[in-house]
Image (cartoon, rainbow, N blue to C red; front, side, top):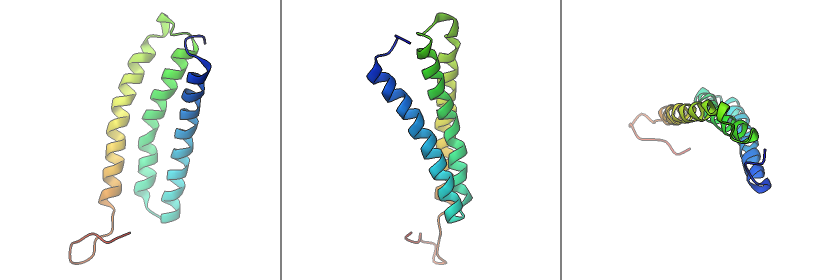
Length: 107
């Protein structure tokens, strides 16, 4: 656990907590607006959360060489997370209201 300083640990842990809170809040927003595309974005955020947890786990065990596979998992889940976040954002964009003239309505 000595691989990172205490302030760096605070940043890592608080970022994970904030990401979890964001997932929950976005899910609730989807429920509140009755727009399932926001819930899809919440699902799309999960791979990035897994990536962050891989990084924290690896650092917690002092970057142990036997856990170096976590770096590969982190990289893979980061790429997957970027793609799922892009898909979730596209899904939200696609679900926007459009008036009969074909232009977007202001929300």
